[in-house]
Image (cartoon, rainbow, N blue to C red; front, top):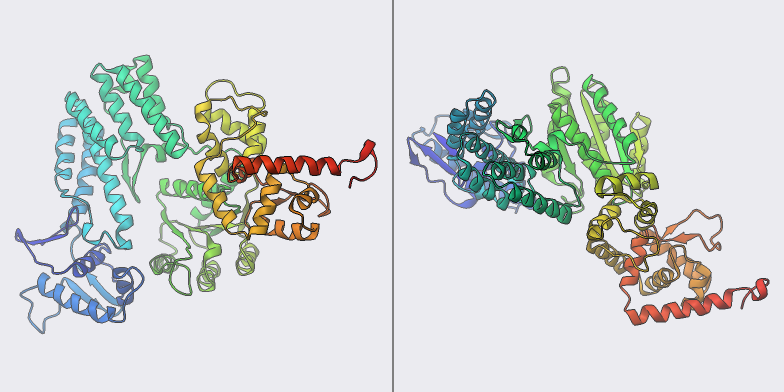
Length: 616
């Protein structure tokens, strides 16, 4: 028997295709195949087959589909004979089959073998092997369950592995002197996934050896602009090194054999993710603390860390770096995200909760022999008490285990989450609040992303615009990249990135009209508006303006500046200059001019006559 997943699901026996029945039955078979022989409970099958919303008849439907699948997979089995392929266990169902019956497993083995042959200089044999593996593909993998969440991770992993194999094939074609074929293959790769840098490297090398270096450099400029526009990133080390080699006509560095993306414990890691180090200025201390957490966990001392901060502070990027380090060291890595649209009463998807419980349970049972595991739980403030209780139970149960857990949480998590975090801290968790970036860190970011000299006022101006928020900083830098380094403090207007404009519109929509009016008048006055002046413009009592300003603080359009008295003109301000400009951008030009005129008049009335006294 043979199971084919690299395209529409096929099960073959003696070269004959077995009829599997309706789509739900095919999805059920795929769900069992992806477990590699492990048992799957009936409730979990119901949840996965109906994406977390099984109907009342789901259990009986699963039993019926199991019965039909058994008849198809073992047609000669007697009525009283126990099934040998699709077995019933005390906790659910499991498929028993050798892994090599899966075309996806055979494909991965072909890729590994081709890479091994390429590494030893046997390019011709490696080319035959990788083409043999690619010939197994018949379309989109796991396509019969494309609408089911349970295939998302494996489908993405298989498609990434296929891209890696096709990059290897293009390099091998180049090594064999089949340059035009290598160029055609690489062109298809960059067309399919324009943000995959390794494919552009292959294309640039092939163009160079086709005596087209100018076109290779033009393609580098193309991908550099693409990365800047879509991701706010500069090209990674592989692309930059290839560009320099083309400029120097360094054919030795450009000549095959090449280093390729490799298939590791957790799938394919691209050249960029394996070799590049993220540029995270201002977060060096937190990165070092996470590295130390992993080092201790590798020796059998479980470690827990909490990364907190406002939206855009860089919590996810820090967690991604921890996951990259752990994956590169061969750890098990589990990344899950709490979400408000999860299952009822939990705000955590059933699939992820079961996965978390299974992994931690396996670790608890095999502490002495298990591989180290990193678990990243993002947005833990959205989890409910049952999820937090589960995590605390394992924190108590696994103090001496090769386990590291990293949580990300907002800076205003709420009382329930604060209690959870307090208990973690009491058990030694490392709590890492992420403050805004300093002006020095902003200067480092600007130096790394701008060619040529950096104006002395540029970092200061960017720090004001972004408020030290890494997300806002990246958005502003990307949006003004076409201006080069000419960032001047005397700009009358700052460009507002579309993403920031959308964020501000959503936050304004959360406010009642009176609070929005206060924010608009504050924006007209300045980054640190005098709330007494806002009260005059709004024709409201100061106490009412302060109450409405507090509502704007709750949606992060305004912030407290830390002044001792609420009557201090500097008590409130915009967290970032670009947020203020976005608020102004929501006003029509005529409305903006009218408010400015009113603000000038109100300020004149508030100015003491002759330099003394109180204005009316």
